[in-house]
Length: 277
Image (tube, rainbow, N blue to C red; front, top):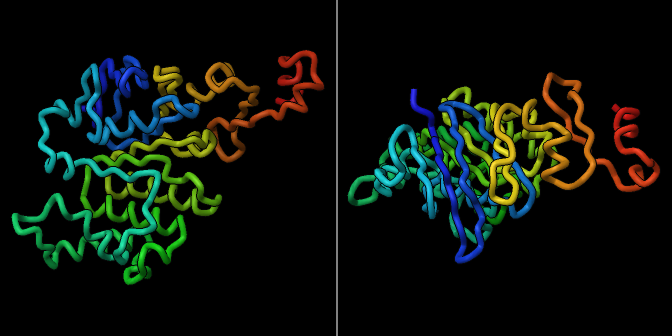
């Protein structure tokens, strides 16, 4: 089986500013793949390239075994859905209309939605648990509700690959978990390959099958959370002292930042780490 995504020596620059440098990796079909890294490391740019919204300046990217350049715009929209980080509040539509927009790549020449399209929209709203909000305007919803509405719109596209740019940013803990559980459910029940950008290392550790850690536009580490989330790797990338142990819920890493006041009391950081671990 071909990977959902295969990238080879991807590079990207905004004018003279290099954002990504010779990234090579692959994403298996049906996995939950999370991109992590410090601010400014190129995570969002990479997500937009995978979603087909940006073209790499150098290198190649294949989607389901075909070069991305071989896809037309409409075919790409049928296979890949993108959920941005910033969800517009002034979108002058009610929820059911927003979700139905996900059918746009599948509509005929006159662009008219059918009863079958409307049924798919209702199913997507039920799956994301926003069906009770169908008649509400977006500006009447909370941040977590809006995020689930746009995920429902993406599901309504019936994609094989969904790319999300920090969908849990600015959400409280309960809404973060609802979004992550929804992604896991989508992967399991709808067999959608999920690619997500995240700043939260602990959420990434709990949910990801594979992590891609990038730093200054380059690949720092790639693999399962236990291989990527080590304190040696993370401290070199994030530039701060961290403790990494095993989460009591299961055998995945737990990352704890160490406040400066604790470090200042210790003359030997290694001894401090051993005492706390």
